[in-house]
Length: 442
Image (cartoon, rainbow, N blue to C red; front, side, top):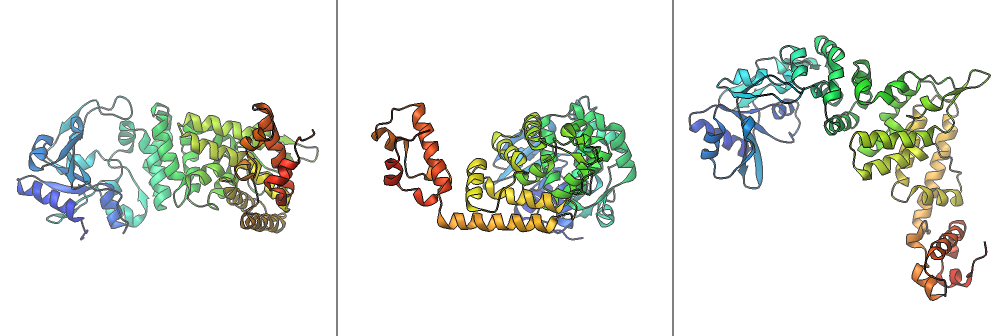
């Protein structure tokens, strides 16, 4: 099989080979090349020790020299070159206690996580595929290299990576690999929140975000997202729903773009339903107040998983307002935009659409029609450049001070009262007119 290596990668390999060592492009870049995808980066493995690699190239960086990795700079691009190695005992479910350099490519490939990531290639020897990774690609299988329990014992995060690769590629997880995840998933408690977050986002923004259900079935979410497990066990006996809470969440994920904020918002939009579940005298379930409870839970979970403040703020708003009823009138829409925020408001249409599409067919047409009407009104408001916040109000704090209002709390209160008037009647957003209303009566 021929793989087109980038010129710079090929040059590094040839320089190392010319010095009497072995060298191959290895891992995910080979997997992606076989799949016809453009690799994000190219890693190289070699029999040469780090010191030997450094002597062969003008510019290198010691990025992980204790683990045998040197970054070779080719112009402004860096390529990681790692010596064949055998990992020692893993004592923390992530790092080997020691690394031994090896002279055999097979030993290096044997320590990698999945067969599809354990292939190597150079132009001289072609594809080296000792563990049948290419065959697993053809079969659509995620399978550990060697003993799955050993691989997951070395780095527990590999269990999440298995589900993530499954979701990205649409592959099945091989039975023994899946059984090992079920058995060893509690080891994920030892993994840092930052690493969990990265894998969760990759899974959610994949082609198959609903494969999160595999993470539930194998015990992964019980460790990293127990709130979701509660949703999977919460029924919805309500005309508006045809799925339990967890299944509804899984279905909504497919109806939004693979954007981090949108997918996280769908994951958490009903996270507060188990805590707010009530059943009326007719056996119908309700979840009054679930959006507010869900917002609080979302913030707590996202902080626990070390998400950045911007992401937390955007997701929590969409969770809080996902169920907000917006009447199809210009006044109602302007007030909703002001309440939610001009930047985040357009995303609410995506969230509401996904929510509706994952519900039962009961009143679906009416809901979609109303949503479309609100969207059309919103677009007209943008076209007309109506004032929606203090940013575009014709009067500023300085104007109020010039008009004789004392600096301080009264300025802010007055500005908000004027904004209320303009939200009702956008044609009043005129400096002279608004100043003529002063002083405002309560």
